[in-house]
Amino acid sequence: MSENNNSVNSASSAYMDDPVLQNRSRAREFFKKFCQRKTAVVAGCFIILLIVLAIIGPSIAPYDPDVYDYSNMRAAPSLQHLMGTDEFGRDVFSRLLAGTRLSLGSALAAVLVGAALGTILGILAGYYGGILESLVMRGSDVLFAMPDILLCIAIVAIIGPGLINVIIAVTVFTIPSFARVMRSATLTVRGSLHVEVARSLGCPDSRILWKHIFPGTVQAMIVNFTMRIGSAILAASSLSFLGFGADVGAPEWGAMLSSGRNFIGVADHLILFPGLLIFLTVLAFNLFGDGLRDTLDPKIK
Amino acid sequence: MTPLLSVKNVTKTFPAGRGKNGKKARVHAVNNISFDIYPGETFSVVGESGCGKSTTGRLVDHLLVPDSGEIWFDGCDISKLSDKEMRPIRKDIQMIFQDPNGSLNPRMRVEDLVAEPLLIHTDMSPAERMKVAHELLQVVGLGAKHAHRFPHEFSGGQRQRIGIARALTVRPKLIIADEPVSSLDVSIQAQVLNLMQQLQRDYELTYMFISHDLSVVEMISDRIAVMYLGSIVELADKKELYAHPRHPYTKALLSAVPIPDPTVQKDHALLEGDIPSTIDLPVGCPFQTRCPRCQADCKLKPIEPVDVGGGHMVACLHMEE
Image (cartoon, each protein chain N blue to C red):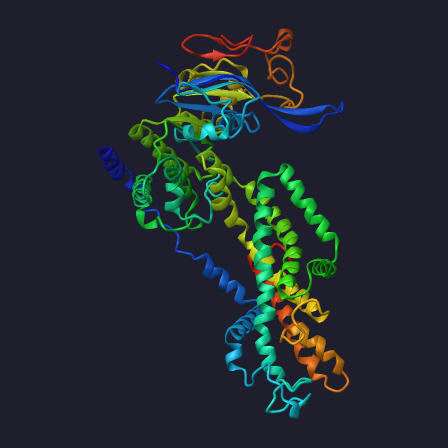
């Protein structure tokens, strides 16, 4: 064997002088292309800012978000209270900072769990087909037939209000979108030659699914993930606004909007700032997702 | 000598929607073909596009299951095995694919790609696997220093050599090469073919070589089977086939090979007509619609190949003497 190798090595050195292309990093190329999309970059910066605030927010808040100050109720924005105070004299800016964790966290948790479940279902449906595929896809169609928010309200009405239950509701309506996207991505990758090669090499199904198909579908998953976070934040806030979600006293953005709407005539800053924040956050996630999608797949516009 | 691979009366059809009369139509990709491949030889399958040569390769590799017939590999009928039962046998049959871009997973490093068969078929440690992978990359002329790169960083010829290295890692008995050079430049083709021949000597490999390119086949083969419309029409040693083609289709095929000499006058055996549809195959000889020697008895029943001497099989009733 070793003799063989030696003779082959010396003889095959004729091929060695082919230059191998320069080391090209896909990640770096992607980053360069992504940076050309200004709106997406701005949106990405805003998202990073939000995440940072969600982590360190409460510790940099100028006031305790839950302390009442009856001498300073519904004060207009000023230097002391950047965004004014609410009907109990709590600092709106501090409450928004504290709420970032709640709003962003619940949306993120819901989409994470929904993405995981939806991805597993979608990949299995796309790879195995047959009865499993029919079950998963028809089930998704049923859930898709109902408007998102109505579905959430129905689920919360069944299992009861509360932040955890809102997360469960948002998860349920996130699953079908992932199942559908991942199934079609799986179908595309399954048909590619390198998956047939993997079969020819003798890979067991688990390895084909995990090593050869899943990595090819990650792009679609990431894009869908960022898009769904926006709608999850919107859904969670809506539910809280309607009184199904977080405790009314909690500094959740939707709940703040809900309690502030009673004073829309006298203290509009109570709904302006939470509303603006929800709007900007959802917009940022959607623009970021658009940018990701366009960079990863320039064919779809 | 016992054959390494024996294909016996194998037929494969694919569903093709509904035909004219509303019945479910089927594409007849491979019709009742039989051949043997002996250890150490290069057996080529040639034919034009759509004649079923790639389907034959996929049948032998158990990527497709034949409708009828048997495929004996190394003393075992693999045609009816389940995917799971087939898995240990795959160690001995490896495949090289036509498209070197598509056959390598773009998200795996070259060393992982080359070592993948070892991961599946052996219980080597990761370090041992990488050692073998690096050795083989060197054997095919890519240094170990490129082992951590991704496939897209290589040229087409280099990628095909990665595919060859991967096929070699588990020391297979049979390598099915499905048009391994047809997507490469002519200069790179020669390089890859030389490498394959050299590896055959060094590793005592048996090749089943599928190609439409007669000059490539002439360079690498020991024996050649000519396919037309899913059937093998002629099978012979390379020298015998190129010197004395007996089947009218083989004659026409060989006369179409260009000779790089403008002074040579060739009498082209030009074929008329088109290939019949593979859904409604003609009864009898598949070549009857285009054959200059076709007679009434060609259209009656399937033509059995006959041995005209020295293992030269011809499926023709009115072959040229």
